[in-house]
Image (cartoon, rainbow over all chains, first blue to last red; front, side):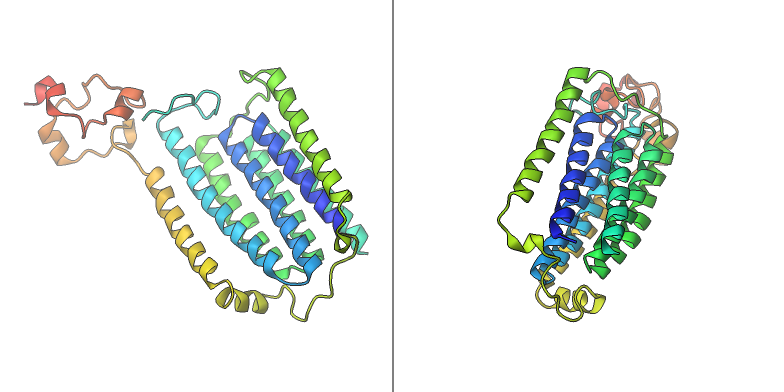
Length: 99
Length: 216
């Protein structure tokens, strides 16, 4: 199984995630699409790690997972704060940076 | 055998990604992402990254997705129309952009001269991808990254708690203290309403006393 296949799958998942970030308006779904893009990058990192035969890429993927978990925690905190202020959960409606 | 497993896992991963993007209900989108993550863990196993696959299933599909499901249940998984004020033309342009990005990446990958990508990978040393090897690397070569990751997790946890905490003046979530009642008897009769920008700009505890005439 050639490693190019893994990289093409990774590119496809990344592009689906990028399209989702641009198309969707719910910030929850936008966070999910960012997760998709991070996971695609993880797949590429692990594939390159396999190509080289050393484990640096896998360590990089693990650190990316830590950063993704932090991003999810802060992003979901923002969404909960939006909900508590009774603002609409829609990125098109949230136009002004006040409060 | 590996080919069959790869195509099953890759089709599952791509289908999960498409479901995440296209399903209207955020709850179903989260479930589609869980399917995507499980398929991706199978791909990691095929690439002999055992610890990364295990961490993917336990951390992502377990912990992070539970957090998502809780927030979707709290906020209310309201179905959203896929088109709206953004406009159909902008949406079309977004899809075209994503397709163009995929074509460009595929050309770059297929047309590359890296001969290592045509193989199944270099000969992996013994213990490649096992938890013991990962732990040894994290405590030797990647010690700084490991410590910074722990610090980042701490900052994110504290930040999430501060962002999502209960603030004063938000209707039933408000906690009245005795000092509030003594200082400001007309605390609910002010010009601000819960959840408005006025209240956000000047919460009642921080307003100057002169702005509420009956308090002094």
